[in-house]
Image (cartoon, rainbow, N blue to C red; front, side, top):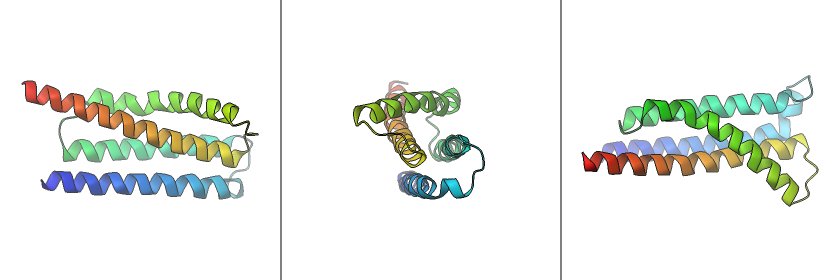
Length: 131
């Protein structure tokens, strides 16, 4: 039971960090970057590094996750978030300012990662029960 509490604390900290970063970076990224496009590059790098850290901590908490999945899920979700973010921009006719792009990408990445983690944990749990 202690691992569930530790996992819940880790997950809530990850969600809070990602949402805080999305809005902070969306509003203040242009103060830190000097080349066009670097704000989005730094946003993607931060999201992936934090995701790897979260997945490593969650893997050490519960040993049900496959290491290969931990490695490839953030990279796959990065590409999927780019596509979903593009469709969101087109669907709502948004001009695509750096603030909008960073916030939409980070929130989309967070939601897709949470969905992927839920699916992976469910599959891994079923496999563990079957053994």
